[in-house]
Image (tube, rainbow, N blue to C red; front, side, top):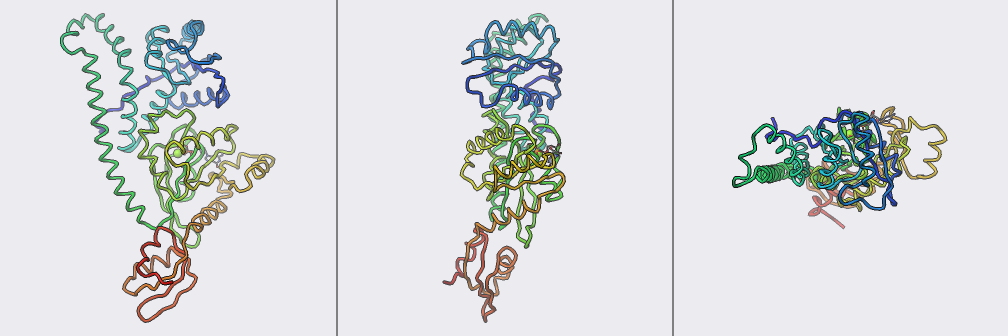
Length: 429
Ligand SMILES: Nc1nc2c(ncn2[C@@H]2O[C@H](COP(=O)(O)OP(=O)(O)OP(=O)(O)O)[C@@H](O)[C@H]2O)c(=O)[nH]1
Ligand SMILES: [Mg+2]
Protein backbone atom coordinates (compact mmCIF):
# COMPACT_ATOMS: atom_id res chain seq x y z
CA UNK A 1 0.00 0.00 0.00
CA UNK A 2 1.29 3.44 -0.84
CA UNK A 3 1.61 5.61 2.22
CA UNK A 4 -0.14 8.48 0.50
CA UNK A 5 -2.98 7.51 -1.75
CA UNK A 6 -2.92 9.19 -5.16
CA UNK A 7 -5.06 12.28 -5.19
CA UNK A 8 -7.04 12.46 -8.40
CA UNK A 9 -6.40 15.98 -9.68
CA UNK A 10 -9.06 15.50 -12.27
CA UNK A 11 -12.35 13.90 -11.34
CA UNK A 12 -13.42 10.87 -13.29
CA UNK A 13 -14.46 12.69 -16.41
CA UNK A 14 -17.22 11.30 -18.50
CA UNK A 15 -18.69 13.70 -21.04
CA UNK A 16 -16.01 16.21 -21.90
CA UNK A 17 -15.93 19.50 -23.79
CA UNK A 18 -12.53 20.54 -25.13
CA UNK A 19 -11.54 24.21 -25.31
CA UNK A 20 -8.62 25.41 -27.40
CA UNK A 21 -7.22 28.79 -28.32
CA UNK A 22 -5.77 29.77 -31.66
CA UNK A 23 -2.76 31.88 -30.70
CA UNK A 24 -0.84 33.90 -33.20
CA UNK A 25 2.22 31.69 -32.80
CA UNK A 26 0.68 28.25 -32.27
CA UNK A 27 3.39 25.62 -32.67
CA UNK A 28 0.66 23.12 -33.61
CA UNK A 29 -2.48 23.74 -35.65
CA UNK A 30 -5.33 24.00 -33.17
CA UNK A 31 -7.30 21.04 -34.47
CA UNK A 32 -4.25 18.76 -34.27
CA UNK A 33 -3.56 19.86 -30.71
CA UNK A 34 -7.22 19.24 -29.82
CA UNK A 35 -7.08 15.82 -31.51
CA UNK A 36 -4.24 14.99 -29.18
CA UNK A 37 -6.12 16.40 -26.18
CA UNK A 38 -9.03 14.17 -27.16
CA UNK A 39 -6.74 11.11 -27.15
CA UNK A 40 -5.45 12.15 -23.74
CA UNK A 41 -9.03 12.55 -22.48
CA UNK A 42 -9.89 9.18 -23.96
CA UNK A 43 -6.90 7.60 -22.19
CA UNK A 44 -8.24 9.05 -18.94
CA UNK A 45 -11.63 7.50 -19.64
CA UNK A 46 -13.60 10.46 -21.00
CA UNK A 47 -15.73 10.82 -24.07
CA UNK A 48 -15.46 14.12 -25.93
CA UNK A 49 -18.85 15.53 -26.84
CA UNK A 50 -17.94 18.97 -28.20
CA UNK A 51 -15.10 21.37 -28.96
CA UNK A 52 -14.96 25.12 -28.56
CA UNK A 53 -12.26 27.41 -29.85
CA UNK A 54 -11.34 31.07 -29.94
CA UNK A 55 -8.71 33.17 -31.64
CA UNK A 56 -6.80 35.28 -29.13
CA UNK A 57 -3.67 37.39 -28.93
CA UNK A 58 -3.32 36.80 -25.21
CA UNK A 59 -5.49 35.22 -22.55
CA UNK A 60 -7.96 37.30 -20.54
CA UNK A 61 -6.46 37.48 -17.05
CA UNK A 62 -9.70 36.71 -15.27
CA UNK A 63 -11.49 34.25 -17.50
CA UNK A 64 -8.80 33.06 -19.94
CA UNK A 65 -11.28 33.17 -22.85
CA UNK A 66 -13.49 36.20 -23.61
CA UNK A 67 -16.72 36.77 -21.71
CA UNK A 68 -18.85 36.00 -24.77
CA UNK A 69 -17.02 32.67 -25.12
CA UNK A 70 -17.60 31.92 -21.47
CA UNK A 71 -21.32 32.38 -22.07
CA UNK A 72 -21.16 30.17 -25.12
CA UNK A 73 -19.34 27.55 -23.06
CA UNK A 74 -22.00 27.63 -20.35
CA UNK A 75 -24.72 27.07 -22.96
CA UNK A 76 -22.78 24.21 -24.52
CA UNK A 77 -22.16 22.55 -21.16
CA UNK A 78 -25.84 22.67 -20.46
CA UNK A 79 -26.94 21.45 -23.90
CA UNK A 80 -24.41 18.63 -24.06
CA UNK A 81 -24.90 17.66 -20.44
CA UNK A 82 -21.13 17.78 -19.95
CA UNK A 83 -19.37 16.70 -16.76
CA UNK A 84 -16.03 18.29 -17.44
CA UNK A 85 -14.45 21.04 -19.54
CA UNK A 86 -10.82 20.52 -20.55
CA UNK A 87 -8.67 23.46 -21.63
CA UNK A 88 -5.77 22.71 -23.93
CA UNK A 89 -3.64 25.41 -22.28
CA UNK A 90 -2.68 25.91 -18.66
CA UNK A 91 -5.16 27.88 -16.54
CA UNK A 92 -4.12 29.87 -13.50
CA UNK A 93 -5.79 28.78 -10.26
CA UNK A 94 -7.96 31.92 -10.29
CA UNK A 95 -9.04 31.46 -13.91
CA UNK A 96 -9.94 27.89 -13.10
CA UNK A 97 -12.00 28.88 -10.11
CA UNK A 98 -13.66 31.77 -12.02
CA UNK A 99 -14.67 29.44 -14.85
CA UNK A 100 -15.86 26.81 -12.43
CA UNK A 101 -18.17 29.33 -10.85
CA UNK A 102 -19.37 30.47 -14.28
CA UNK A 103 -20.37 27.01 -15.52
CA UNK A 104 -21.68 26.05 -12.10
CA UNK A 105 -21.21 22.95 -10.00
CA UNK A 106 -20.78 20.05 -10.37
CA UNK A 107 -19.10 20.65 -13.73
CA UNK A 108 -15.33 20.60 -13.39
CA UNK A 109 -12.88 22.80 -15.23
CA UNK A 110 -9.48 21.25 -15.76
CA UNK A 111 -6.51 21.90 -18.01
CA UNK A 112 -4.09 19.77 -20.03
CA UNK A 113 -1.69 19.55 -17.09
CA UNK A 114 -4.36 18.18 -14.74
CA UNK A 115 -5.37 15.67 -17.38
CA UNK A 116 -1.80 14.47 -17.88
CA UNK A 117 -1.26 14.30 -14.11
CA UNK A 118 -4.39 12.21 -13.88
CA UNK A 119 -3.15 9.76 -16.54
CA UNK A 120 0.25 9.60 -14.87
CA UNK A 121 -1.53 8.76 -11.61
CA UNK A 122 -3.35 5.91 -13.34
CA UNK A 123 -0.22 4.50 -14.99
CA UNK A 124 2.51 4.87 -12.34
CA UNK A 125 3.62 1.43 -11.16
CA UNK A 126 6.81 1.66 -9.16
CA UNK A 127 7.22 3.34 -5.81
CA UNK A 128 9.41 6.03 -7.30
CA UNK A 129 6.95 6.66 -10.13
CA UNK A 130 4.07 6.97 -7.70
CA UNK A 131 6.02 9.30 -5.43
CA UNK A 132 6.93 11.52 -8.38
CA UNK A 133 3.34 11.72 -9.57
CA UNK A 134 1.99 12.37 -6.08
CA UNK A 135 4.46 15.19 -5.63
CA UNK A 136 3.53 16.78 -8.95
CA UNK A 137 -0.19 16.38 -8.18
CA UNK A 138 0.06 17.99 -4.76
CA UNK A 139 2.13 20.86 -6.14
CA UNK A 140 -0.61 21.38 -8.69
CA UNK A 141 -3.31 21.27 -6.01
CA UNK A 142 -1.70 23.55 -3.45
CA UNK A 143 -2.41 26.93 -5.11
CA UNK A 144 -5.85 25.69 -6.09
CA UNK A 145 -7.05 24.83 -2.61
CA UNK A 146 -8.93 28.05 -2.10
CA UNK A 147 -11.36 27.28 -4.89
CA UNK A 148 -11.84 23.76 -3.67
CA UNK A 149 -12.33 24.97 -0.14
CA UNK A 150 -15.03 27.47 -1.02
CA UNK A 151 -16.90 24.61 -2.62
CA UNK A 152 -16.42 22.46 0.49
CA UNK A 153 -17.37 25.24 2.86
CA UNK A 154 -20.63 25.84 1.06
CA UNK A 155 -21.62 22.23 1.40
CA UNK A 156 -20.77 22.24 5.06
CA UNK A 157 -22.77 25.40 5.64
CA UNK A 158 -25.62 23.70 3.91
CA UNK A 159 -25.13 20.77 6.20
CA UNK A 160 -25.22 23.06 9.19
CA UNK A 161 -21.60 22.55 10.12
CA UNK A 162 -18.95 25.18 9.62
CA UNK A 163 -19.57 27.32 12.68
CA UNK A 164 -16.32 25.96 14.11
CA UNK A 165 -14.30 27.56 11.36
CA UNK A 166 -12.60 30.83 11.92
CA UNK A 167 -11.53 29.93 15.43
CA UNK A 168 -7.80 30.20 15.39
CA UNK A 169 -6.50 28.42 12.37
CA UNK A 170 -8.90 28.21 9.49
CA UNK A 171 -9.52 24.84 7.91
CA UNK A 172 -8.01 26.18 4.72
CA UNK A 173 -4.73 26.85 6.45
CA UNK A 174 -4.81 23.44 8.06
CA UNK A 175 -5.32 21.88 4.66
CA UNK A 176 -2.54 23.96 3.19
CA UNK A 177 -0.20 23.00 5.96
CA UNK A 178 -1.16 19.35 5.66
CA UNK A 179 -0.42 19.42 1.97
CA UNK A 180 2.85 21.26 2.51
CA UNK A 181 3.85 18.64 5.07
CA UNK A 182 2.97 15.89 2.65
CA UNK A 183 4.99 17.57 -0.08
CA UNK A 184 7.99 17.79 2.26
CA UNK A 185 7.57 14.13 3.26
CA UNK A 186 7.31 13.06 -0.37
CA UNK A 187 10.45 15.02 -1.23
CA UNK A 188 12.35 13.30 1.58
CA UNK A 189 11.15 9.90 0.52
CA UNK A 190 11.98 10.58 -3.11
CA UNK A 191 15.45 11.64 -2.14
CA UNK A 192 16.01 8.30 -0.44
CA UNK A 193 14.76 6.42 -3.47
CA UNK A 194 16.97 8.56 -5.68
CA UNK A 195 20.02 7.84 -3.55
CA UNK A 196 19.38 4.15 -3.94
CA UNK A 197 18.98 4.65 -7.67
CA UNK A 198 22.28 6.53 -7.75
CA UNK A 199 24.04 3.53 -6.25
CA UNK A 200 22.41 1.31 -8.88
CA UNK A 201 23.30 3.56 -11.76
CA UNK A 202 26.84 3.93 -10.46
CA UNK A 203 27.25 0.21 -10.76
CA UNK A 204 25.82 0.53 -14.24
CA UNK A 205 28.32 3.25 -15.10
CA UNK A 206 31.10 0.98 -13.97
CA UNK A 207 29.75 -1.79 -16.15
CA UNK A 208 31.36 -1.73 -19.57
CA UNK A 209 28.11 -2.14 -21.49
CA UNK A 210 27.23 0.54 -24.00
CA UNK A 211 24.11 2.29 -22.76
CA UNK A 212 21.27 3.21 -25.08
CA UNK A 213 18.18 5.13 -23.95
CA UNK A 214 14.94 5.20 -25.91
CA UNK A 215 13.41 8.66 -26.04
CA UNK A 216 10.52 9.87 -28.10
CA UNK A 217 6.99 11.10 -28.30
CA UNK A 218 4.42 9.14 -26.38
CA UNK A 219 3.05 6.21 -28.44
CA UNK A 220 6.03 6.20 -30.83
CA UNK A 221 6.65 2.51 -30.09
CA UNK A 222 9.56 2.65 -27.62
CA UNK A 223 8.28 -0.16 -25.41
CA UNK A 224 7.42 -2.30 -28.44
CA UNK A 225 11.02 -1.85 -29.64
CA UNK A 226 12.47 -2.79 -26.24
CA UNK A 227 10.24 -5.86 -26.11
CA UNK A 228 11.07 -6.90 -29.64
CA UNK A 229 14.83 -6.61 -29.16
CA UNK A 230 15.19 -8.04 -25.69
CA UNK A 231 12.16 -10.28 -25.28
CA UNK A 232 11.02 -8.03 -22.47
CA UNK A 233 7.35 -7.66 -21.61
CA UNK A 234 6.91 -3.96 -20.89
CA UNK A 235 3.30 -2.94 -21.41
CA UNK A 236 2.85 -1.46 -24.83
CA UNK A 237 -0.51 -0.23 -25.94
CA UNK A 238 -2.22 2.29 -28.13
CA UNK A 239 -2.63 4.73 -25.29
CA UNK A 240 -0.74 7.88 -24.44
CA UNK A 241 1.76 7.55 -21.61
CA UNK A 242 1.45 3.78 -21.32
CA UNK A 243 4.95 3.74 -19.80
CA UNK A 244 6.05 5.88 -16.87
CA UNK A 245 8.70 3.90 -15.08
CA UNK A 246 12.04 3.16 -16.66
CA UNK A 247 13.01 -0.40 -17.54
CA UNK A 248 16.56 -1.42 -18.44
CA UNK A 249 17.37 -4.66 -20.27
CA UNK A 250 20.62 -6.10 -21.56
CA UNK A 251 21.25 -6.94 -25.16
CA UNK A 252 24.23 -8.47 -26.91
CA UNK A 253 25.26 -6.80 -30.14
CA UNK A 254 26.49 -8.97 -33.02
CA UNK A 255 30.12 -9.72 -32.18
CA UNK A 256 29.25 -10.16 -28.52
CA UNK A 257 29.54 -6.65 -27.23
CA UNK A 258 27.26 -5.95 -24.28
CA UNK A 259 24.72 -3.16 -24.33
CA UNK A 260 21.80 -2.03 -22.19
CA UNK A 261 18.58 -0.47 -23.45
CA UNK A 262 16.41 1.72 -21.26
CA UNK A 263 12.78 2.47 -22.04
CA UNK A 264 11.20 5.35 -20.19
CA UNK A 265 8.39 7.89 -20.10
CA UNK A 266 7.39 9.45 -23.43
CA UNK A 267 7.26 13.15 -24.18
CA UNK A 268 4.45 15.36 -25.40
CA UNK A 269 4.03 18.94 -26.57
CA UNK A 270 3.18 21.37 -23.76
CA UNK A 271 4.61 18.92 -21.24
CA UNK A 272 3.95 20.50 -17.83
CA UNK A 273 7.10 21.97 -16.31
CA UNK A 274 6.29 20.54 -12.91
CA UNK A 275 6.26 17.09 -14.41
CA UNK A 276 9.61 17.48 -16.11
CA UNK A 277 10.91 18.54 -12.72
CA UNK A 278 9.26 15.72 -10.84
CA UNK A 279 10.56 13.21 -13.37
CA UNK A 280 14.11 14.52 -13.39
CA UNK A 281 15.48 11.43 -11.72
CA UNK A 282 13.61 9.07 -14.04
CA UNK A 283 14.80 11.12 -16.98
CA UNK A 284 18.34 10.94 -15.67
CA UNK A 285 18.34 7.45 -17.17
CA UNK A 286 18.22 9.23 -20.51
CA UNK A 287 20.94 11.65 -19.47
CA UNK A 288 23.28 8.88 -18.43
CA UNK A 289 23.10 7.10 -21.77
CA UNK A 290 25.97 6.84 -24.25
CA UNK A 291 23.47 7.08 -27.08
CA UNK A 292 19.91 8.43 -27.14
CA UNK A 293 17.72 6.81 -29.75
CA UNK A 294 14.99 9.23 -30.73
CA UNK A 295 12.16 6.95 -31.77
CA UNK A 296 9.75 8.60 -34.20
CA UNK A 297 6.37 7.27 -35.31
CA UNK A 298 6.81 7.69 -39.06
CA UNK A 299 3.16 6.92 -39.68
CA UNK A 300 1.91 9.91 -37.67
CA UNK A 301 1.20 12.94 -39.79
CA UNK A 302 2.52 15.13 -36.98
CA UNK A 303 5.84 13.31 -36.73
CA UNK A 304 7.93 16.43 -37.45
CA UNK A 305 6.20 18.50 -34.81
CA UNK A 306 6.54 15.57 -32.42
CA UNK A 307 10.24 15.42 -33.11
CA UNK A 308 10.53 19.14 -32.34
CA UNK A 309 8.69 18.64 -29.06
CA UNK A 310 11.06 15.78 -28.16
CA UNK A 311 14.10 17.93 -28.92
CA UNK A 312 12.70 20.69 -26.73
CA UNK A 313 12.27 18.38 -23.75
CA UNK A 314 15.72 16.84 -24.29
CA UNK A 315 17.15 20.36 -24.26
CA UNK A 316 15.23 21.18 -21.15
CA UNK A 317 16.59 18.21 -19.21
CA UNK A 318 20.10 19.00 -20.40
CA UNK A 319 20.42 16.14 -22.88
CA UNK A 320 20.57 18.42 -25.90
CA UNK A 321 24.26 17.85 -26.44
CA UNK A 322 24.21 14.09 -26.06
CA UNK A 323 24.89 11.69 -28.88
CA UNK A 324 21.54 11.00 -30.53
CA UNK A 325 20.28 9.00 -33.44
CA UNK A 326 16.86 9.61 -34.98
CA UNK A 327 15.14 6.39 -36.00
CA UNK A 328 11.78 5.95 -37.71
CA UNK A 329 9.39 3.28 -36.48
CA UNK A 330 6.09 1.86 -37.81
CA UNK A 331 7.23 1.80 -41.43
CA UNK A 332 4.94 -1.19 -41.96
CA UNK A 333 2.19 1.44 -42.09
CA UNK A 334 3.89 3.43 -44.88
CA UNK A 335 3.44 2.84 -48.59
CA UNK A 336 6.41 2.78 -50.92
CA UNK A 337 6.02 6.45 -51.88
CA UNK A 338 6.17 7.57 -48.24
CA UNK A 339 9.15 5.32 -47.54
CA UNK A 340 10.98 6.83 -50.45
CA UNK A 341 10.30 10.36 -49.33
CA UNK A 342 11.59 9.51 -45.84
CA UNK A 343 14.77 8.09 -47.32
CA UNK A 344 15.23 11.25 -49.36
CA UNK A 345 14.65 13.59 -46.45
CA UNK A 346 16.70 11.65 -43.93
CA UNK A 347 19.31 9.75 -45.92
CA UNK A 348 21.15 8.78 -42.75
CA UNK A 349 18.14 7.60 -40.80
CA UNK A 350 17.21 4.04 -39.97
CA UNK A 351 13.68 2.94 -40.89
CA UNK A 352 12.18 -0.06 -39.16
CA UNK A 353 9.08 -1.65 -37.74
CA UNK A 354 9.21 -2.77 -34.14
CA UNK A 355 6.04 -4.72 -34.79
CA UNK A 356 7.02 -6.77 -37.82
CA UNK A 357 10.77 -6.75 -37.18
CA UNK A 358 11.54 -5.28 -40.61
CA UNK A 359 14.69 -3.15 -40.59
CA UNK A 360 15.70 -4.15 -37.06
CA UNK A 361 18.97 -5.69 -38.25
CA UNK A 362 19.89 -2.33 -39.77
CA UNK A 363 19.01 -0.63 -36.52
CA UNK A 364 21.18 -2.98 -34.49
CA UNK A 365 24.09 -2.59 -36.95
CA UNK A 366 23.79 1.13 -36.70
CA UNK A 367 23.88 1.03 -32.90
CA UNK A 368 26.93 -1.24 -33.06
CA UNK A 369 28.63 1.27 -35.34
CA UNK A 370 27.84 4.14 -33.00
CA UNK A 371 29.17 2.10 -30.09
CA UNK A 372 32.37 1.27 -31.94
CA UNK A 373 32.88 4.92 -32.90
CA UNK A 374 33.40 5.87 -29.25
CA UNK A 375 36.04 3.16 -28.73
CA UNK A 376 39.61 4.06 -27.97
CA UNK A 377 42.67 2.36 -29.38
CA UNK A 378 45.29 1.28 -26.89
CA UNK A 379 48.20 -1.04 -26.26
CA UNK A 380 48.82 -2.73 -22.93
CA UNK A 381 50.71 -5.54 -21.25
CA UNK A 382 48.25 -7.13 -18.85
CA UNK A 383 49.70 -9.52 -16.27
CA UNK A 384 48.16 -12.99 -16.12
CA UNK A 385 47.00 -12.42 -12.56
CA UNK A 386 44.51 -9.87 -13.94
CA UNK A 387 42.39 -12.68 -15.36
CA UNK A 388 39.12 -10.73 -15.13
CA UNK A 389 40.58 -7.78 -17.00
CA UNK A 390 41.85 -10.04 -19.78
CA UNK A 391 38.40 -11.59 -20.10
CA UNK A 392 36.82 -8.13 -20.19
CA UNK A 393 39.11 -7.06 -23.01
CA UNK A 394 38.26 -10.22 -24.93
CA UNK A 395 34.52 -9.80 -24.43
CA UNK A 396 34.11 -6.10 -24.96
CA UNK A 397 37.01 -5.10 -27.16
CA UNK A 398 38.11 -5.67 -30.70
CA UNK A 399 41.58 -7.21 -30.60
CA UNK A 400 43.96 -6.03 -33.30
CA UNK A 401 46.97 -7.82 -31.89
CA UNK A 402 47.53 -10.33 -29.10
CA UNK A 403 50.77 -11.88 -27.92
CA UNK A 404 51.38 -14.16 -24.95
CA UNK A 405 54.52 -13.09 -23.12
CA UNK A 406 56.13 -14.59 -20.06
CA UNK A 407 54.41 -12.40 -17.47
CA UNK A 408 51.21 -11.52 -19.27
CA UNK A 409 49.34 -10.74 -22.48
CA UNK A 410 50.39 -7.94 -24.80
CA UNK A 411 47.38 -6.50 -26.60
CA UNK A 412 46.50 -3.81 -29.06
CA UNK A 413 42.75 -3.35 -28.99
CA UNK A 414 39.85 -1.02 -29.53
CA UNK A 415 38.04 -0.75 -26.24
CA UNK A 416 34.89 0.95 -24.98
CA UNK A 417 35.92 4.34 -23.56
CA UNK A 418 34.52 3.31 -20.22
CA UNK A 419 36.87 0.36 -19.69
CA UNK A 420 39.99 1.97 -21.07
CA UNK A 421 40.89 3.67 -17.75
CA UNK A 422 41.02 0.29 -16.02
CA UNK A 423 43.98 -0.64 -18.17
CA UNK A 424 45.77 2.58 -17.50
CA UNK A 425 48.46 1.14 -15.29
CA UNK A 426 49.39 -1.45 -17.92
CA UNK A 427 49.54 0.89 -20.91
CA UNK A 428 52.48 0.63 -23.24
CA UNK A 429 53.39 3.05 -25.97
N1 LIG B 1 1.82 -0.80 -36.97
C1 LIG B 1 2.74 -0.67 -36.02
N2 LIG B 1 2.36 -0.38 -34.76
C2 LIG B 1 3.32 -0.25 -33.82
C3 LIG B 1 4.70 -0.40 -34.12
N3 LIG B 1 5.40 -0.20 -32.99
C4 LIG B 1 4.50 0.06 -32.02
N4 LIG B 1 3.24 0.03 -32.51
C5 LIG B 1 1.98 0.26 -31.78
O1 LIG B 1 1.97 1.59 -31.30
C6 LIG B 1 1.33 1.67 -30.03
C7 LIG B 1 2.24 2.33 -29.03
O2 LIG B 1 3.36 1.50 -28.78
P1 LIG B 1 4.21 1.57 -27.43
O3 LIG B 1 5.36 0.66 -27.61
O4 LIG B 1 3.32 1.40 -26.26
O5 LIG B 1 4.68 3.10 -27.52
P2 LIG B 1 5.56 3.90 -26.46
O6 LIG B 1 6.47 4.77 -27.27
O7 LIG B 1 6.19 2.98 -25.50
O8 LIG B 1 4.45 4.81 -25.80
P3 LIG B 1 4.37 5.43 -24.30
O9 LIG B 1 4.83 4.42 -23.33
O10 LIG B 1 2.93 5.75 -24.17
O11 LIG B 1 5.22 6.66 -24.32
C8 LIG B 1 0.96 0.23 -29.66
O12 LIG B 1 -0.39 0.04 -29.99
C9 LIG B 1 1.88 -0.60 -30.54
O13 LIG B 1 1.33 -1.86 -30.85
C10 LIG B 1 5.06 -0.71 -35.48
O14 LIG B 1 6.23 -0.87 -35.85
N5 LIG B 1 4.04 -0.81 -36.36
MG1 LIG C 1 6.00 2.81 -23.54
